[in-house]
Length: 399
Image (tube, rainbow, N blue to C red; front, side):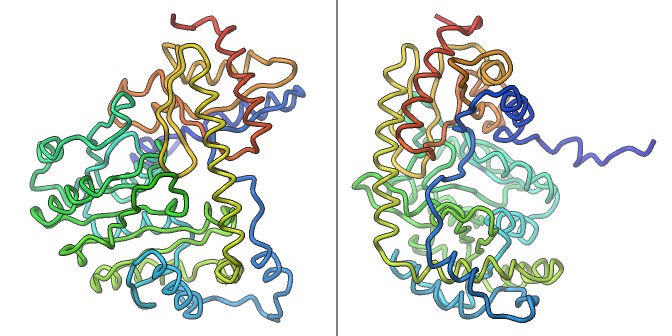
């Protein structure tokens, strides 16, 4: 039998989705599963987007331009201007989700064997995209004890060598909800400038910041405009995960030319997705305000509830809609699987993402989980209660 590729062997299973078969089996047994494992918001998609899809008047669902429709990119210029991000339509390339934007950035900017420095824990699919591009992720570790703040600049410089080509950040952060400070962003800027690196900045959660601290985009950093590649997506801000519309934004013309070759090879981003995403920009401010206020309430509900459970600790996330929590268990992955396979309380259980899958360094995150507060407060409250009962019953509990 022919062998699969080395990439196929090295590609990690998603820590977010790998327990899905156990969750499906639990549902088949009639158990209700509270999904805290995945960033799939339960809030409604903007009516303007749904109406645009319902009222499509085309007679042909055609290919769109490889870089996306100009009308959509022109509207995005105004959207980014609200955040003091100064771009032109030509700086914006529409992609099939933020995921494709990351992958095309890696394929365009990195050679096989090149290294990217990433603070960990990090969004697990970054590793998958790096493997796809033949690149190597090197991590600087942030800790739950320090609220996942960035380590000192020396920790970055210890990793920099002749193969280092980029730093990748997610701000606000998935999985931790951490928001980088101005000092931390300036620290990254100085490193990028000193070593002439790319800065890949995933900023898909900019709408969800719950502190008085400002949102510092990589595009706000002076002196590295040609080094910055911004990653964006409509999935989270409009509850439009399924339309697969993202964006890659850069002032670097050479990078854009390279990215466009990959865009042309895959032909075009989703037509109907672009129609919905463009219409979403016409939705009034009230939609964004209601969504934001709801996440503020959910964050309080989840974090307060977690920290009331004996042995559980979560820092307060300042952005996005995730948190990483420490549990009183030796092996969180075993606990998460046990919750789905062997446990239920009054016919209910919880599904979480084991945090070890968000770390590259072996052994880190073993007693941590990522939780997404994407359920309504009543469901979050009940899920926390079921989680507390699971921890009481779990045979591997660590006192």
